[in-house]
Length: 156
Image 1 (cartoon, helix red, strand yellow):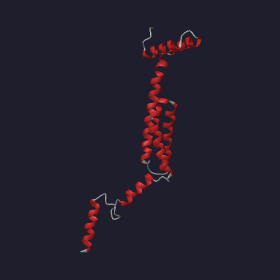
Image 2: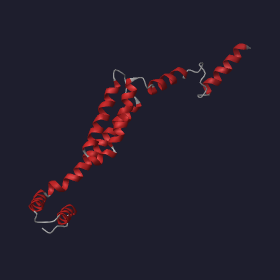
Image 3: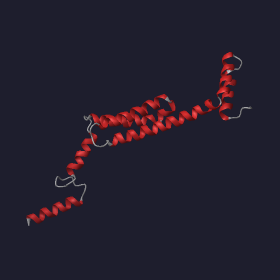
Image 4: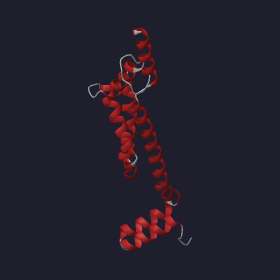
């Protein structure tokens, strides 16, 4: 009668995944993974968390240009370094790599968008900057002409 009671308890433990009894087969596995992923004393976890934050910060910093590239690169490098000799990346490191790559793509796209008018209308920009630096046009006229070049409304 005692052995049937034990079988009944073990069946209940296996059917209930939230029962954190030590008889449950997933008890030690789940706790090991939780502790491994959230241990603040482990330098790999700290580095992976820092990689995630740097990668996430690279997205809003993309509008500044230079700082977005630094944060993206830092996030990717820290995520790769956080792996150490482990077989796979920690979840925080995977997120850091993803955010870092998204930040790099966003930075490159934004820089390309900002540089395209300058590269396609270089002669016009040079002539307007020369006029402004010689004092031939005011600041407002300078800004209006730059806006016309960017919008493509200047007479040719």
